[in-house]
Image (cartoon, rainbow, N blue to C red; front, side, top):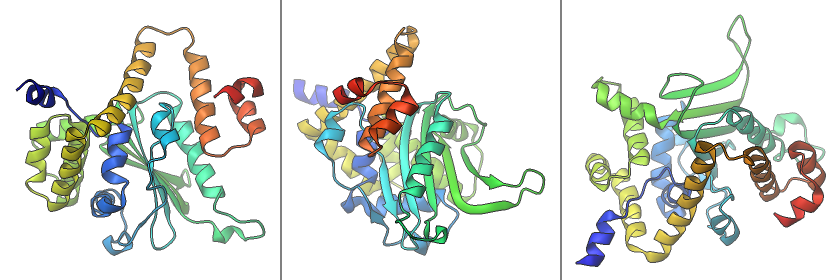
Length: 286
């Protein structure tokens, strides 16, 4: 009885990056990822079929290191590379950070001696939990446009923001969006909520979402999965506490976290130190 009560009290939200990758970033759940992308991207559905996951394994260093990146990376059959990341709380540096990551992802695919036309289209999709300030849209998409004519210079830069808080507002407003938008709203509500009854209700109308919900149920029942989930969630709570109480070392902590992210992504030590301002001695300890 006590164990069942404890199970009932334990809640999971896919705003947790470990849980998000567990549901959307594994080989067995490719259909889930395909359905989600079909709602977000303005491309034919058949272009999303047979997508290739680029980092489908859960590496111990990134799972156990609380500052490690657990984003979902994939390649479409036309060569387009996509990176999906959860950001629980918006901050002033995040717009620049996502452009920086996009640039890294774009340039790292060009081999020495190749022409620029070999560069693939790269898309970043950012799901933001709270505090999004760039606009008031549920789904915003940024590209490189001519200022006056609004014509596109190139379609190779595409940055999306999905506002999870706005999804709740849309549902309560009672508006009637088109089918694709409603599917996206449902997915964002599914990701945002920590209420298993809400997830079950949403899954009743979608076989693919039901598959995603079954993965969440496995996480709820597996002690190791729950420990990994809580380990990641604790870090998010710690970050929120630092911000709430005006933690005096906040700027330094941000630099250290940025350095860890860059180190995990294979940046050169000199480049990391130049961008973050930390020393090589400090970098070696991270």
